[in-house]
Image (cartoon, rainbow, N blue to C red; front, side, top):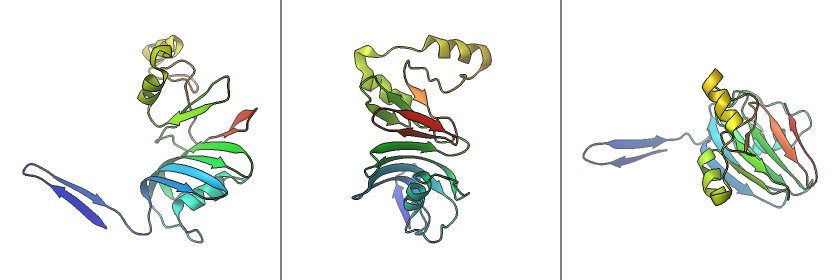
Length: 169
């Protein structure tokens, strides 16, 4: 499928292949709700879609993602297990930024600016992360520039139950 938008000075083209996924996708059914963002570069056999593959694989104990994607991030609300699972690709090309507050509210986005707007007057700069960035050129660990907001490490899953959470590599 090819879509174009033309003007006097530019032509925007979006192309997609019917069997490859790209961009964002939202899916909901009786077992789970999922939002995913990414680009699939290779066809996946035995699954209806790339998102179905991600859900099945990310909810499994073994969780070995095959090399079907350029990048992805994915959040699954697993209704059967009463858990949320956040995941990102092995290189972290598509970061997943999250916050889990004291009341166990999980907030996530692919952009830090979302948290600045969400937090409003309670927004605080993470000065340790600023210091690390200026000294060594990147943050150590999963810090962001916003206090109490973290980035999921590349190739990891954050599994959140109502009272516990853990990062699994």
